[in-house]
Length: 284
Image (cartoon, rainbow, N blue to C red; front, top):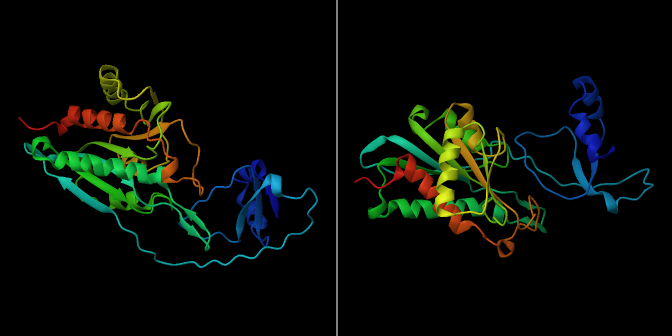
């Protein structure tokens, strides 16, 4: 079965009985304008491939495909957690998160480096951890750093953490999730900014005073990164990502040498100032 992208999207709105009939096809090919890869936590009933629309013949009554795939059950991933205990209020927690996984390889030739998504966020997490472990910067509140695994397969690492929390969720004062921070020509977007106006106002006021990034924009609720399982449990959380620059996403072009890191230093300053305002400032 061959579909164009708009038709594949419409399938999501059809009754289950109809989609079950379509799932009896030997394979599903979707014609797209750009090739992107993704992972899933479950196996589809048939091979599903993306094909560049401009490479697909106008008249192709039949296509032969050959796919080698292996389902690895009970695959184990890891969350990596570290923390700096607070000097004055160790039972109050600020959380910094980033997912360290990406898409890996597809066959012997296709490799997905994941520089922007999300080596950039992981690097920022490590920079912040190094900053707060310095004796002069030891925070008043405890600051926890979590590098999640299996985000690309459906936020599995963060969902596991909220189901098996190492710190009480009710004692998390705020969570900042870092994902896609390798650009910044057009500024920064804050997911959940519209849901948490007071915290968003604090963030923007800090930027107005210090000019960390060129622009900050707010979004609403979105289930697109590891902040989401926390915010659904009532933890106040932002997901920050930079805008502008390269457009590589979930493809083989997301390479370190292409990242401008335009706002990397500014985002570090903004996030640390925000955390300090919430309780991570060195105890006096």
